[in-house]
Image (cartoon, rainbow, N blue to C red):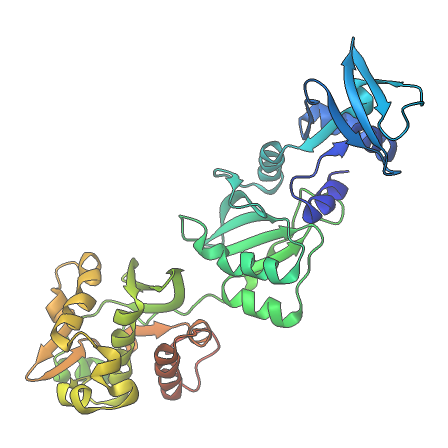
Length: 379
């Protein structure tokens, strides 16, 4: 019965269900679900109201004693029909109770509640070192469903590693599935035997992003000292957008959020780590460059102001390192003061960006690590 109700809710999330229909279809399950609180009766309207029957006739429903008197609006000569409250009773799935039972069945915890009219947060868990969120998706029309699913990672205040969406009937095309899995969103069906039990193995099997290397080789250590780099903090460019035009980086395990404008300049400094020996980008290259090397594109407000705005969000993640040491300016040159091996990225996620400058710089990053596996940065 619960499976059937969820299928119906995909078509209309606010749907109510006739007691008579539920008892006729699922006589045993109805009583079981009622006792468990999975469904609850919706109070009938107070006072005189109206309804339309399956044959299209309008009726006036008048409370009378313990029941109702139904008058046919289209046939004044017809005899009134006496009905009980059970004849008009409607039932609704209690999503709060459903979520608690879902948590118990799948070993989850956390809060639960509606994210919007089509997505309901069921709970979360930690599995194999991954933080996993579970959501009921009442998805129907494809275009609208994909909008909801793409926005899911930004709909939750907590940042999760994986998002599992339990869908009663909606399924993805292979191309849609690949796109959403790049966002760590996995759509799974209801359990074959128990609609409260889901198999989310695919979400756990997706390879994790490769973290930046924490140790340098002997040759890289010599280069680190020779070039005078200041930072050994690992940097992961996730490619994810936390909110509109807010780009997520991880620096030594701390989240850093950059606007698109600051993110473009940061990516250009990362590219310079691979295109130059010492990572320095001459200011003259920005002042007189064109395209993605142009100050007009990377620092339209002026380089000094752009650098100040870029450094600020990194402050809490840097520990004893000063922002001016992390992003270093020296003799009309500027660089991200770290060895390239401390930087990694999710190339697949970056390649999905619509911003032309970010996409162009991502292509340049890809050229320097052609052997990197999808979704991974430098080895």
